[in-house]
Image 1: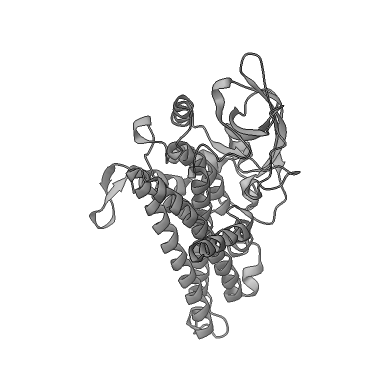
Image 2: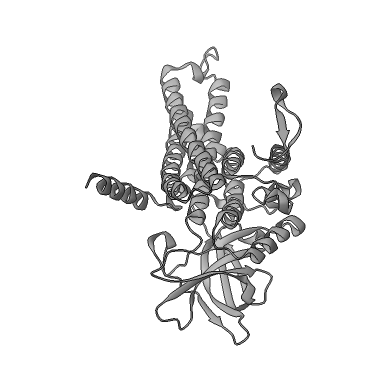
Length: 398
């Protein structure tokens, strides 16, 4: 991992500040006995450990983690509790996009870093809207941004599926610039303690129920001029480049890969302990169970290879300031997300088949089965990614 060494770990390998913070965070999560209900203490445990500073550069007081570190942390956390990992994934991708984007105002970036380090700030993007659907399919924000004479903005609208909403201190809110012709959209950093901000409860979702993905309402919320992240015409590319999408896709991939790996561990332990009938033979000794468990392991290990290869290549391209490499790798992030979420879906399905009736009872396996399927609706969406792969093949073959 990327932070400075601190002491010695297993086999004499240096222990990093990131590993220290992760261990403390996981210990805090383990103590909470988390389930389907939202528990704000999960975020408290992450902040108390210092892990919320994971992607903030070391020079700014953070842990200096990179994408490969984020993948390792989120995968490990996802195996413990999917909802906590998904909530923290939002912090990771939002900060990662700030660090790696080419056109974020430097003063805004520094203020966000200070808020995280000094105040324990937690962030997410607020983009999805009920009427317009997913931004991944090109939805134009219905939320309006009206500029005032002094250069400040007033934001009015409603966002849905804002993960970890009760925990958030700030959100990056997308909106349409009022009166702009041609249409312009932008992104603003909103302090969620501002007057006019209303946080609605989480949705009654199938999976990730503890993530408190709720409804964020903005009623003429005043945002200082300096908190405009970016503004562009609708027909122009995002000036921040490919970093926001790459960080989001990788955070999602690692989180759901962790959910699948957690199910693999849980069902393996169950199969070793379960001895039906005369008690002489464990379920783990049955050939059919071994085939299913082997299938789970093969899918998850293949996904892990893809996820970490892509994360390492992204970090290498950033270090080399290789714009072409970043564009190429950003396409492979979509592949990593696709492979990881599908592996998690398959793993949790096979785990329930191994466990049979006991697996359908309320508990970790049943919850992992539901949580894994939430990854199917997170961008990059499967059909969008596959269509993009097809276009690349056709262009290369023309």
